[in-house]
Length: 344
Image (tube, rainbow, N blue to C red; front, side):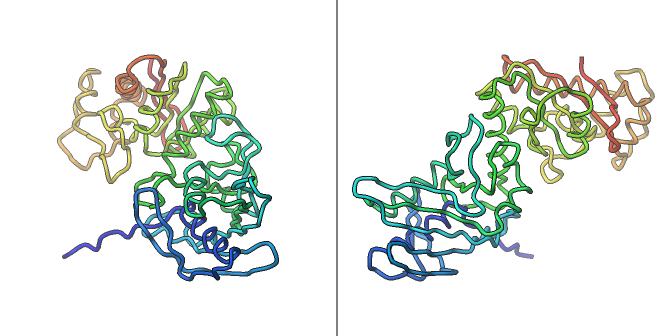
C-alpha cells in the first residue's frame, strides 16, 4: 500500500501577507489579484484565493482562508483579513490589531508590550511583498478571541486574540512548530518576569498536580506535552535557576530511558528497562511479558520505590541535556494526579 504524503499548509503570517498584498494592490489601482501570489523568505511563490474584497476611499480590505494542510492546527479554516489604509508620506508600514488578533502585555516576547501580536517574521514578509510604501495594515481574525483560548496565548500575556506567526510561511504537518514556539516563548516570558523557577508539565492532570504541590504563578507553568526535549534544549541556551518536571509515570519512564520525545509515535515505555530498575530495588522481576503496562510494573514495586527511581533517572537525563546551570527536580504522578515518585 502506497502512503499518500501529508499535505503542507500555510502559516497565519503567509495568509496575512497574501491578504495584505491583495488589498494593497487594489488600493494602489491594480485591482484585486485573485489568486494573489506572494514570495516567501525561502523563495517559494504560493498563490492564495481571496475570501473577501472591498475597496473604499483610502482603504482596501481582502481576506484569505487559512489552509493548514494536514496539520492539526487550531487556526485551520480561520479567515485572515487585512485592511490596508494610506498613511502620511514617510511613515512607512504600521501594524494594528483588529478583531481576533491579540495584543502583547508581558515582556519577553519578540514583540514589546502594547504592540499587536504580529511576529517579526510576518511583519517582514508583509513589508517585503508590499515594497516601499506608506500604509497602515490592520489584521483581523473573526472568532480569533475564542480560538485563542485553545492556545497558550493567555498564559503568555497575549490578550484579545491569536498571534500572527510563521518564519518560513509554510506549515509542516505534525512538526509541532507552533507548540514548540509556545514553549520557547513561555520560557522567555518567565525569564523576563524574573521568575527563577519554571515548572514543565505533560498535561492537564500533571499541571493540576503542580498547582497543588508547588507555589508558582501561572507564567512559571509550561505545558510541554510530549516535548521534553523542546524544554530542556531551550533551557540549555536560556537557563533558569530551577526546573521541576511534573508528569505521568509512563511518560517520565520514557524520559528516564533517554527519550526526549514522549509521544507514542516516537517512543514506547521500555518494560525491560523498568524491570531492571525493579531488580535494582531488590524486587522480584516480573515474568517476561512485552504487554506488561507501566502501571502494572509500578504496582509490582509497591508504588513509591520504582516511582522514585524513575524520577531520579529522569532527572539525570534532564541534567545531562541541560549541561549545568539549572537545578532539576522530577515528580511522577498517576492518572488520578497522586504522586507516585519524586527525585532527590
